[in-house]
Amino acid sequence: MIYINYLSKIISISIKSKFIILLLPANLIFIINSFSQSSFEFLTINENAKIKALGGNNVSLTKNQNYYLSNPSLLFYSKNQNISINHMNYIADINSSSILYSDSLKHIGKFGIGIKYFSHGKFDGYDVLGNSTGSFNPKEFAFTITKSVQFSNFIFGTNLKYVNSKIFDKSDNALLIDIGGIFYPTRKKNLTIGMTISNFGFLLSKNNIYIPFFIQIGTTFKPEYMPIRFTFTINKSSEKNNLLNIYSNSFNKLLSLMNIGTEILISKNINFQLGYNYKLNKELSLKNNRHNGGISYGIEILLKRFNINYARVIMNTINTSNVISLNFNLKRI
Image 1 (cartoon, helix red, strand yellow):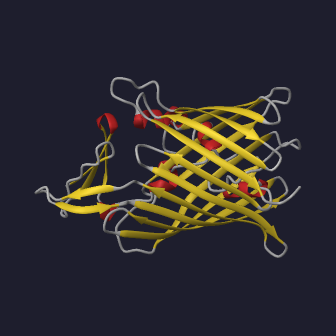
Image 2: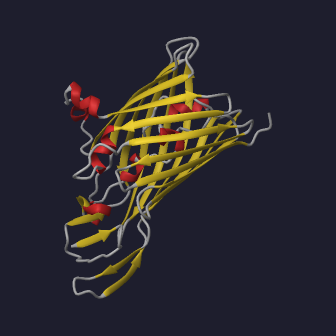
C-alpha cells in the first residue's frame, strides 16, 4: 500500500496495492484509485486569482482577461496580444501554474493558446520493509488551443486539450474537448449567462482511468446603480460521464453545489472580491470545525496595460491557499 503524507512526506510502497491513501494535514484522508486507475482531477482546479477570490468556479465573467480555461467562449472578451500568468500554492507543496495567450489573426479570428502545469511536490519512497526506493515528482500538465465565435447575443467556444499525468511509474495521456457558451439578454450586457460541458474525449494511454467530466452553469450580473457585481455558479461533476446523474439531484442538492461571489467596484483601478464555495468547505472541513472553510477573498489592481490579482482561499482552520495572477496587454493602446 502507498501512503503519501503531504505534511511529513512519508511513503510506504507496495506494488500490489489497489488504493492510495492521501494523508493531508490534520489527518484529513482521501482514498482514491490506485496509480493504474488515476484521473485528471487537476483539470477541475482553477488557478486564476480573480476566479478563486469569487469562490473558485466561474463561467460568466466577461472581463478583458484570459478566463477561457474556465469557459472557452470567454476568449471572445480577451484583448488581442494579451498574456496571463497564474500561480497558486494549493496545499502544502502542491502548486498549480498556467500561462495563457490570446490574439486575433485575419484568417483565423480570435484564438487562445495556454499551458497548465500541476505539481504535487517531491516525495521519498520506501517499500514495505523500509528500504528507500528513491524520490519522485508527481506532475501533470494540459496544453490547450481555444477558439470562439459570436452569433447575435450568443458566443460559443471550444477548448482542445492534450493532457498528460505522471503520478508514479505510469503516464496517462488524453485528448479532451470543452464546449462553452455565453448569452447576454440585454443590450447593456450587465447580465451574462454561461455554461460549459468539460472533458469530452478519449485516452491515448492503455491504463484504466476515469476522466472528470463536469458541467458548470452560472450567471454574472451588475445592478445598474450599484458598484457591486454578483456571480453564481453551479458545478456538478460525474466520474461516469452520465448526464442523467448530473440532474438527478434534488433542488437542495443543487444549491449545495453553488459557489457565490461578490465583486465590490471601489474605483476604476481597484476592486475587491469575496466568495464562498460550499463544496470546498464540505470536502476539506475538519471534524470539529466545519464552518470556516470555503471562504475566499481578493483584490484586483487595474492599470492601463497591466492588471494584478491576489486571492486567499481558506480551506479550513489550518490550511489556506494563496493565488496570484498577472495580466499584461502586449499591444500598445
